[in-house]
Length: 250
Image (cartoon, one colour):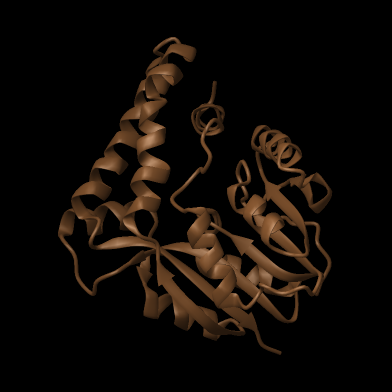
């Protein structure tokens, strides 16, 4: 297996492919003012196996287009949606988030939890804006420094992994520069990282390595994931995901 195939095999059995929780998705819905009867058209970009898509479909009068690069994730989402009786509200689309086949002004909401970093926060906010109707909402989570300064070790790690990492004030300025008016922002709590992501993932490492016959590539991937989890536990007061909610301005 190549690296992407290994990542899919490791993560597809998880409820979430990154930090988050149903309660934080619900919180963002409230801040965004979306708890209403008005029918909505929503794109959930980088949806993974559908944790946020299912919350959106279960909470709103909406049609959800759930987008992910990996068909394996989307197949699991379709199965989960069927079990919850939400299949009629969710359609899936396998494509890259930087080559979306959407029309201008097509969506009321663009949602993306733990995924916009794949093309970069500013590029995603700028490129996806065209797909939003006037007054449409962008709701995304993004890795964010939660303090003005931090230890050199974690600074260097994240600047190497994701040079676009910044503080909330820097991210909000990016939104304003690219035609949005911020409506709200909050930090994901520690349980989103530990109980909902790292702990379940680490519990699957043994089965994953057995499936991959202890290959050196699989062992290397587990080592990378272990390092990331360890760094979070050591430096969790300095960074998290921020949830950003903004409205498209004309």
